[in-house]
Length: 219
Ligand SMILES: CC(C)(COP(=O)(O)OP(=O)(O)OC[C@H]1O[C@@H](n2cnc3c(N)ncnc32)[C@H](O)[C@@H]1OP(=O)(O)O)[C@@H](O)C(=O)NCCC(=O)NCCS
Image: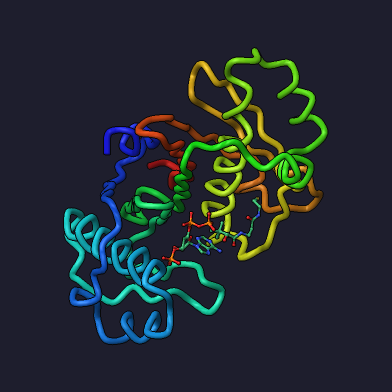
């Protein structure tokens, strides 16, 4: 939990746990959403809903169904925003009040070496050059961190732009020692509000956790 709390500077409530089949705690429309899904998907979907309701309750929100939109993005109750992520046996959710935070992006990945065939897909040429210059002992786990940071950035920008970005559209400047990164959209014409956002990452418990936040102006 501490790893996820440390990702955000805004007033954000986080909840995290291992996955469990939580069908009983779901609203009928949520259950219907995953009724044909395999057990693993039902577990990640259900666990994420239970954690999200717990975190939202800490902010004073009433329990409501959290059914994704047709674009698969989460739909949060009026007045709240957040982000969810799941990996092999872990799920995490971050939520905040919309008056304080405009958007959040959270991503967790099991620490692993990214398949070498994915390196060219995920990393820009500049990022690949940066990677080659890193000390050999830390290099193997950096690609999954960059991957996760881009996913967190994507989730944060999506509610603002509703736009799709490719991995090559986003370039990261990452400071491994500080656990921070800056994500910048290199494709022309992207919304100024999210064209450049800062984020944080924490490696703990065999996972990398990445968070990106867009505070409300003046909050
Ligand atoms: C959305 C996406 C980033 C999810 O990431 P993932 O690593 O596959 O899965 P995670 O478990 O971390 O996250 C899943 C959650 O993301 C959220 N999500 C899905 N689409 C989303 C979107 N467009 N915006 C914000 N959040 C989204 C959902 O809450 C989902 O959980 P749920 O299915 O239980 O509701 C990914 O599937 C996707 O759509 N990628 C396309 C864009 C992309 O990756 N571009 C490269 C990076 S710039």
